[in-house]
Each structure stands twice: as structure tokens, then as C-alpha cells.
Image (cartoon, rainbow, N blue to C red; front, side, top):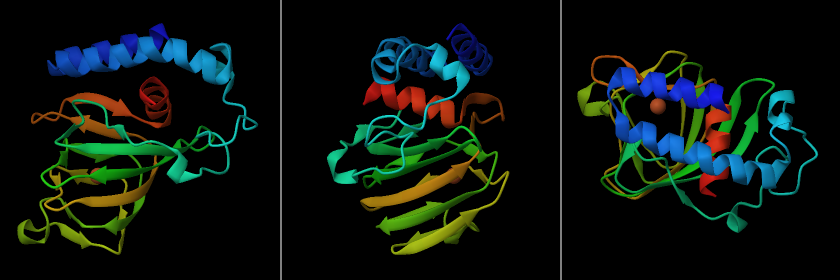
Length: 198
Ligand SMILES: [Fe+2]
């Protein structure tokens, strides 16, 4: 626990993003209680996560999605109304999968994909890297997209209500305008944030 609090404190202090740091710290404190209730003592996290956990668990093998509530995506990593459902984490390969509900006018903060990712835009429209009018791509539902390792997304915006599913291999490196890391968000961080907010 202290290791991750310290990591986020250093990263956010470096970037001067106190608000984001406090958000993650609060999430971490809440997680300490909730993860214990959900998956047992914290030593289980150090060993890895048992794949025999309860149904509808993000470490299980099936999610009944309509029985999972949407939760606001962590503050500081997006603007506007973005909610998410974490569907799966794979500690063995550092992968995580989620579905995002992005209302018109919302956007994700600047980030770099440390590993590749694949998405399925199920509803609406998503402008990636500024969209097609600025040299990027504009996905229109139903649309599939592949984002390569090290893809940098300065602008990921939604001008209409949209929804997409995505699997990430490796973490997202959220950065400020100078390229400093604000938060490194991999399977463990989303797992902790989800358990804190769900
Ligand atoms: Fe992205």
C-alpha cells in the first residue's frame, strides 16, 4: 500500500498536480478497506489475485454488464461526464478491459499507450489524436480501432454521446503539457480505483 501511495505522490508532485494526487490517495485509502472486504487480506494482492473469486468480479471470467453500475472515471484523468465499468484485469499479462460511457463534450486527458490497445466504438463518435480534420482519426460507431504501442493521444474527444469498449495491454501514461507523468495507470491502479469507487 505504502509503495503505491509513495509512487503516486512522487509522480503527481513532480507534475504539480495536487488535485489528482489527493484523488488517488483518497481512492487508495478507501481501497484499503474495500479491497479487504472484496478479496480478503492485502497479502493476496502481493501474491496475485485468485481467479476463483465471486461471479461478476473483474478477476473472474464473466461479467453480466447490465448488473454493474456505471461509475465516474477518476477525476483528473478526464474532463466532462465520463463513466466506466471495469470488466477485467489480467495481472499475468498486465492487461485490463473496460467500457466507457462518454457524454457529449467529454474528453480524456493527454496520455500515451505504453502497450497496444484495441477498441470497439459501440455508440457515437470518437475523435482520436484530434480527429480526422487534424491528422488523427475519427471513429464512427460501429467502429473498431487498434492503437499501437507508444501511441500518444493528446486529444481524445466526444462531440456526441458515445460508448466504447477497450482492452489495454500495459498501462496508460497520463502526462502534462511538458510530457511529465501525472499518473501511470495499469491493471493494478484501475483495479484499486474500481474497488474504491464501485
Ligand atoms: Fe488513448
